[in-house]
Structure formats: structure tokens, C-alpha cells
Image (cartoon, rainbow, N blue to C red; front, side, top):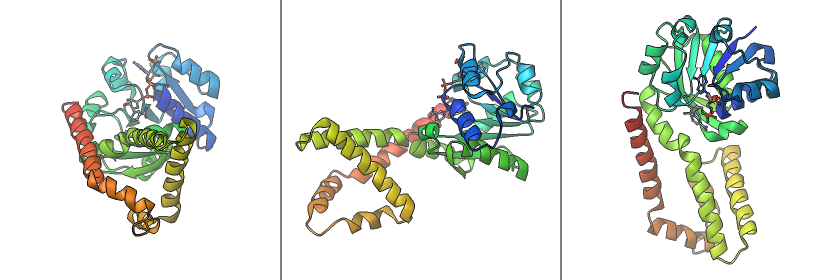
Length: 268
Ligand SMILES: NC(=O)c1ccc[n+]([C@@H]2O[C@H](COP(=O)([O-])OP(=O)(O)OC[C@H]3O[C@@H](n4cnc5c(N)ncnc54)[C@H](OP(=O)(O)O)[C@@H]3O)[C@@H](O)[C@H]2O)c1
């Protein structure tokens, strides 16, 4: 009996399905998905054993909750029967930039609507997703949302106006980290290392430092100070970062992405 119906069977839907099945929170018979006609649903079904009915009524009829996982620009092209078929159901949207007010126009009779902003590490269960609800969630719906989004990694609840800042920080953040990793690698090459060695050193330094922060729960400034001897090597490096206002640059970066998110979600 289908409990969760996925509209979209691409990267994010696949990551959620994989996570739910791996954690045994749902069995394949309780999940179903559909796509826009390019075959992603049958690929996901073939790989995992979830259902992929072609008729929307068959997909949504028995479902208790709907996960909206198509591209934001594909929302307008959804089968218009969705409005009636979603009546009384919990709708979870992971569509970037689509506000609760506009989702409520598509799903006016949904039991409740949740808007979430995941990030790319969610594809390996190492993401962080912020979410907000149209109305306060009853405990059973909160548990459903925690399970679905928990398949992508960590979960935090925020107020909807904060979702643009979330997008600027954790939504776009993986790209900043990838850029930092590439910069660290290239700097290692400039310092005389072979590219493959520099890549490995950069990756493991980021990974190890992030793990140390997570495991100890220590503030990053404290960990930084613990490895910085007065007038030592790290001190020399950090001085250059401060001279070029590294923190100011990162602040500008997050604020620019936040502002762009606000622009893109205007009337959306
Ligand atoms: N990737 C990320 O890290 C990330 C982060 C934050 C938010 N998001 C959000 O997550 C959503 C999905 O992203 P993605 O990377 O998983 O995209 P994706 O891989 O392109 O998957 C999109 C899915 O939607 C399907 N689709 C298209 N039209 C449809 C329709 N009319 N009815 C039902 N399904 C339809 C597509 O099917 P076809 O294959 O047939 O086209 C495909 O299965 C996006 O809205 C994005 O904003 C993603």
C-alpha cells in the first residue's frame, strides 16, 4: 500500500528513496514515483523495487503524503488533476524558491504543506535540510517529515522568511566548499606539490577538520587557535587571510546568494 508518492524521480527523489529503504523506514511497496516522461521513474523503480504507475490517480490515490521533487519550473506543467488528488494529504516540496503561498494555490486542500531546502550532500545522506510548514504540524506529520528529510541527513525547522538565508548558507554552501577545496589544491600546486597529492591533501584536510568540529562540538575559532602557535606557520597563513578580509568575503558571498534567493522567490 503506497504511503509516499514522489512527483519526480531524479537525483533528490532517488536519494530520499534510497535513504528511506536503507534505514528500513519504509518498504518498496509503500513508495511510488512518477516522472515527466524521460524514464527516471522506471529507472528508480527497476533499481529499488518501488512502484512507478503511469496514472497520477493510481500514484496519489492511496498515498498519505506527496513529495514534490521535480524542478521548480516543472511545477506549472504538472497534471492539473493534482489539485483534487492531493486533497487531505501532506505535501512536502523540495522545490527551490517555491513559497508556501504559491504551493498552497496548487494544493489548496492539502492537509498541510511543508517547504524544504535540502543541499547536495543529501545525495549521500550527509546533507542538511531546513524546512517550514504552512501550518503547525501534528505529531504524526512531523514524524513523517523527519523521516523523509532525515533520509538526506540532518534536519532543522525554521520560519519561512529565513529560507533565503538558509539557501545562501547551506543550500549554496557546498559550492563554496568545493571552490575552497579547488583553491587549496591549486595553492598546494603553487607551493610545489604534484596535483594528485595536493588534491588528496586538500580533500582530507577539509574532511578531517569538519569531522573534528562535529565530533568535539568545539567552536571553530577555538580549534583554529589550538593549531596556531605565535609567529608559526599557521599564524603566517592566517595573517594573509585576515589581510585580504577572508571573513568579509565569505559574508559578502552568503549575503549575495541570500539576496539572489529573495529575488528568485519573489512571486514564486
Ligand atoms: N540537487 C540538489 O542538491 C537540490 C538542492 C536543493 C533543492 N533541490 C530541489 O530538488 C528538486 C529536484 O532536483 P533534482 O536535482 O532531483 O532534479 P532532477 O534530477 O532533474 O529530477 C527532476 C525529476 O522531476 C521529474 N519531472 C519532470 N516533470 C515532471 C512532471 N510533470 N511530473 C512529475 N515528475 C516530473 C523528472 O522526470 P524526467 O526525468 O522525466 O524529466 C525527474 O525525475 C528541484 O526542485 C530542486 O530545486 C535540489
